[in-house]
Image (cartoon, rainbow, N blue to C red; front, side):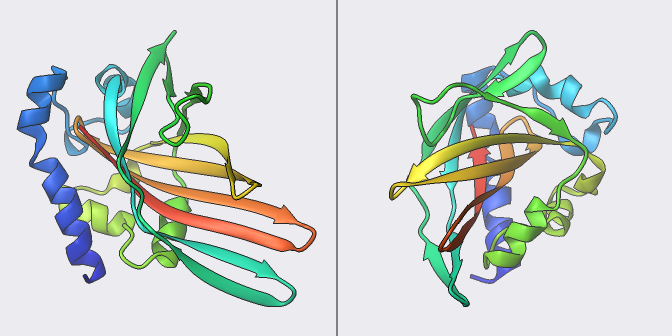
Length: 197
């Protein structure tokens, strides 16, 4: 599926499934385009609290070493869940990859190139321009959420950074980048992710 049509399908499907999930979550509706960028995250923090379904979409792994670079497609994973928690005014989120892991601290960042890096690496991944076209405003004017974590994959510990753009009370788009550097080379992982409820 071409990049934009796939993007539009994923995002608009999530946007317009809001009514059923809203009734279950009892969350006050909000939309990024109706909010003040200066106070956006503070205004929506309470609305983020609760359970979200996470979809780790198809990604790309890049292994480098010995003068060779080998891209390896990473298949999409089955849906998992994550919970946003508000503690003392600070956001935290449970790990959607390891339920036994400690809570992840969530930071607010003004911007990040991670979305564009993932979009460039993974065919069909979201760009911020595409997100802006679908939702109807320039999302780059709004801050994002960021967290970091580590996962062991095939005996190798990869360090990950994830950024999330909250579009409304039922839809979050995200991008994840993981890396490890060893004596024999490096591994880089790029993956788009969505959260819905």
